Structures are given as structure tokens and as C-alpha cells.
Image 1 (cartoon, helix red, strand yellow):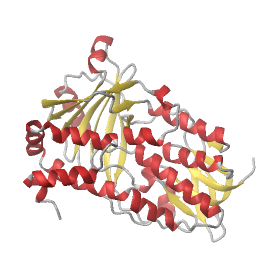
Image 2 (spheres, one colour; image 1 turned 90 degrees about the vertical axis):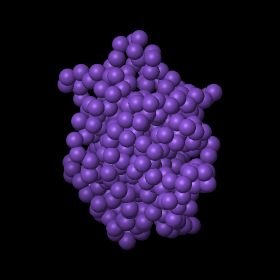
Image 3 (cartoon, one colour; image 1 turned 60 degrees about the vertical axis):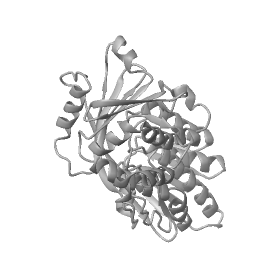
Image 4 (tube, helix red, strand yellow; image 1 turned 180 degrees about the vertical axis):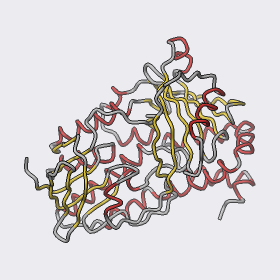
Length: 381
């Protein structure tokens, strides 16, 4: 295998595979490496919002396991508020299948894929980058993309400046009998107030339920206890020995630091680009992967510097995260008040789902809330 490339991408999730596919399609020599062997399991609710769907190329529709037209909001697993839409607002997919499909797309575009390759070190020099594997092999490139997730080795190895605060999730796949599964299909269940600075969810999939909880602070203790309380409150039995998987959420607040060095960029979770209100990261992974590919291709031709990537993220992604963080600050601090508010005025919840679908922005929602509700005006500064 040739060991010299234009761009080496560490991490073959949605951000890395998108970046690799778009660069390879334009003729760049791209190497995509990932420690996992694909297809691989990925703990994630797997909800594709409208914004994420807009970033995907045709074919993703074949991966859909459930289309949800109803979103049910609870407070501490009680007092449900049902919001119904004429069309599916969130499409449910398996991350194992989605990520594998994206990686196959990158390979079909011409990217060299090396899965099962654990990166041990990355080095940046004035001339380029070197990626060294745990097996002793090394690859050289002109540029590097860190798409290696919340615990990114690339981020820790090079002088980036990111401002994301880490949260945590715990998720499992519950197999339920067909009759019960049918009752959950077409609906997303969300419950806040039962876990500090976060919420629980139930997402229907083809043959099981994706059930989990997440908190946007790492200070929360006893995550498994919160998870079991959530399941009990929602009437779900968790079998003995069921495997739950944890993950880190690098939720952003809209303050973007330096996501570039002279030779490297960070994308997706590695850059901390995760919605601080919903925890949704697929859209931001896809979007940042696309932006990185555009800037890198121009850099390969000598037309741009990598600092333009950070600037574009600040202009095109950061504002949404900033207003999402404002809304999260109010909602998670005052969940009883907020649930009474949305129950009295379901339009608030409907507008929130519309934002996730991509038909409106968090800034639109924030301005709507500030104009109408005193509790949001108190945080408007």
C-alpha cells in the first residue's frame, strides 16, 4: 500500500466518511483509518433529523427502520404532551448500518479504507503529518482530519482549542414482544426532569427499542440508577444482564475556538460539535465533514489556509449551537415550569421539533420564547 496521501482522516464515522468521500470524489488521495472493523456497533439513538437528512446523498432512505410522526414530551415520566405532525419528523436508523453505508460511499469514491487500524500517535511538521499505528505502520499526508470522536487522540495530540463541555449517556437496545413494539412505532418519547441537565428517550427501531438517558454534565452520578428509574417510569422492563453502553457527549455552547492547526482540522464530535440541548450530533458531523472537505480541497490547490475552516464553522454552525445552549440553560434548570408552559401552549413544543427538523432555527425559537415568556427574558443577555 502506498503510504503517502494528500489527506489522512482518522475516524470513519459520519464526519470522517463524509469528508473522505467528498475529497476522494474530486481526485484527492485520501486514507480513512478507524480502530474498529466495520460494520461496528455504535451506541446512539440513531434519529435522523431533517437537517441531517439534507446533508445525506440519496440511498439513506433504504436504511430507515421507523418514521416518527409523533413526539411525546414527559416531565419525570408523567404528564405526557403529544405533538403530531403530518409527515415523519425524525427517521430512525441503525448507526451500525448508517456508518457502514457512509464508509462504503467513501471507498466507492476512491478513498483508501484501513479499518481495524488503531492510531497510536500523530505528528505534525511544517511539511505535513504522520500517523503511526499501534502495529508499527506509519502513513504520511499533506493534511490530517481528526474525526475520531469525543475522546479524540488527534485533538489531544495537536494544539487545538475547543470549548466543548463533556456530558454522558447510557443507552441500550431493548427487545420487546411484537405487540408492545407496535405500540411504540411512529413515536419518539422524550422525558426531562428525571436526570440533571438532560433527558431520557425511547426511539422505535425495526425490531427493538433504543432506550437511553443523557446528561450534559459529567458531574452526574449514578447514571445506571437514573436509567432504571426512567425505564420503570415509562413502563419498560429491563431484563437482568442486558448490556448498556455509555458514551461521552462533547456538547458545544457556540463558542468555537481553534479547530485547525497549520496541517490539521477537527470535525464532528472531535471538534465538540454536538447540540447542547438535544445531544444530536449526526447533522453537525455531516456538515462539518463537508466544510472540512471544501476547505481542504482548496488548500491542496494552494487557494485557502486551514484557518478558513474554523471561520466557516463559526459563521455557519456556531450560531445555532449558541442559541441551543441558551435554551438548554433555561429548560434544564427549570423543567417543572417549562413543562407547565409547553402543556399550556403546545406550540412551543411544536416549534422545538420544527427546529430539529430544520424548518426553523434555534435563533427563531429563542426570539419567540423571549418575546412571550418572562423566564426566558431573565436569561436574555
